Image (spheres, one colour):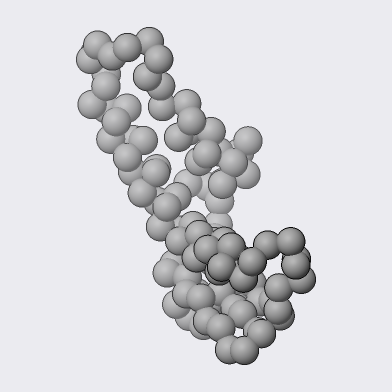
Length: 98
């Protein structure tokens, strides 16, 4: 991976209306206060924050699985509908290569 990211793991901390996603070195990745969007319940914002927090691990796992599957699939018959393209597109999007 060529992209440089804040080291994992990322952690979500909330205190009142202040929320922060920080790396293991306690350097903030993102900080926000309150939830401005009244169209979404607080639980949706919390779910979004958890997904953002998991992003480094999700990207790493997807890269490893994509590489593994590419090796396993070489010379293997699979239906034409099977492709690693969605995984590769997601990796490219996350690393800025899209």
